[in-house]
Length: 360
Image 1 (cartoon, helix red, strand yellow):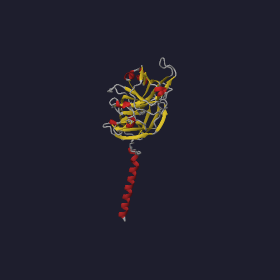
Image 2 (cartoon, rainbow, N blue to C red):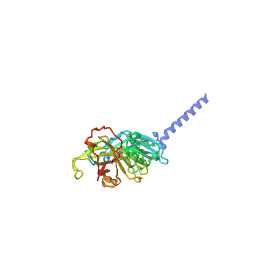
Image 3 (cartoon, helix red, strand yellow):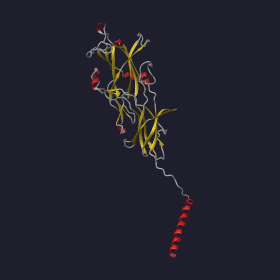
Image 4 (cartoon, rainbow, N blue to C red):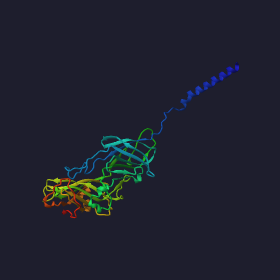
């Protein structure tokens, strides 16, 4: 009985000491903290430069048809390993907004702390294709070649030794090299190389306006042209197009009229024109820059007019405005016997050996 009472006293003594120890803990300076895990979610914002020559500004003739600007719906962003360029993480930015800096796209991307290269570009272009999207070193934008059946329709095909491709629509690209993702608690913001909490995207495609005068345009049922010496692709990492393969661009032409005396001595001057998209003119193109116009007339004849326009790219209109205003006039021959008929869908003969006259 006495041993039981002694045991009970010792237990009560131990419990009292333990309670005193717990009550004394705050006096040692310890305190409880809410546990937090590092976050891998990072906020990204990309502004898009929507001012594009010959698309929504800087027209040679505002009354003529020009490409319709379509604002991108989605941007794809990617973080690539800085050491070897392989894709680590990607997301699609669907959020949009406007502020004093312009129109932007935003969202979140998940990535562990590290050093990355950053690329953003608009998703859903019609003609422009992005290839090798998982490897930044070989990631390029390009357009497809025209179909063999379409190419076979052109007499110029025999003179063009490079692939003929469709022209490009605009691809807005933002870049960042050696971008840091740091350890952070809660969402953080990805910063550009300049330290700004956003990136800026601009198009890697140039829109050029091309025009040449035509006499006898009433005899033209359709007209197209092929322009060689152009870059076939552009690399997204550094926007380099100078080292790409050479290509020729296929373009369909429209007709236009100038009511005033655009050329001295000519009234109601007519022309054919187009606006085309290119990644750039190759500085090391092996051939002279030749544009070959090909016509189908209302009376069923088909013929071609090749013109060297190398010098046109060095004129102020080209360097300042991206206008190729060819200072020559193509004369379409009248039909034999003065007839024509056929409308816009005439019966078409084989290629005629006669070249159209060019008035200087």
